[in-house]
Length: 222
Ligand code: PRT
Ligand code: ZN
Image 1: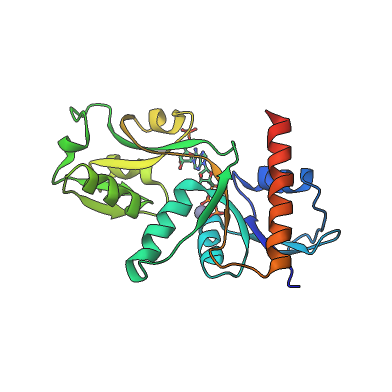
Image 2: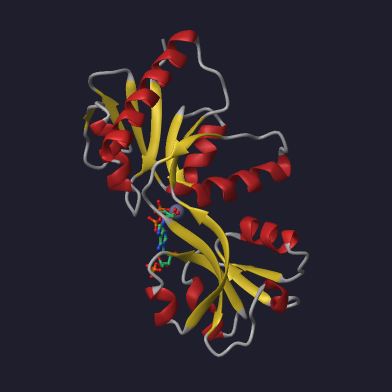
């Protein structure tokens, strides 16, 4: 049978907890310091260490069969992929109870805006243009989206945006930049996803076994 590849974040907020969950589920890998690929020692299951943004595509294309990524990233990338290919899917196998955060709409402390409706015709800076567009559409509001890959929270003080849609966990970053959250856009946490393609019988059996083990570790932690 073919080996199963699991994609996790190489470094960042989800990296350690993702690896830890897999190791506690009984997977042992031959670690290599710089490489992106760790070979599975005890099961035909290997690890791919990548940027979180790449994980949804690796799954959609079936390069990896399992992946751990924030729901915010999975949903954003899925909406993006669906523009060209409406049939694209990504199957969630469950939330993992770490990496909790909220995508929120925030405005300068001095702003009078109370909701998204007050931002009609304004500019919203975000790294999540798809989720932001969907939020605008759901609320029947038209506004311009300014896509930024980083430093979104300084856009209002630079004058490049009137509001931001960004991830918040403690709220420290918003406060430090004299911003206040006015509406939640999406709650997110790390989740386990699988590729939409069906594997051969042996592969599906191995996926089931892994899932059972991961759920066991999750329940033990509760
Ligand atoms: O290099 P790579 O592309 O893999 O990593 P990355 O820099 O894109 O992502 P990373 O490691 O920062 O975040 C990975 C995932 O962690 C995110 O996609 C979320 O699912 C989750 N997560 C949880 C967060 C936060 N909490 C979070 N607070 N991601 C980012 N933040 C940032 C936020 O963007 C803001 O700048 O932290 C700041 C706000 O934090 P507070 O505590 O000040 O509110
Ligand atoms: Zn990223």
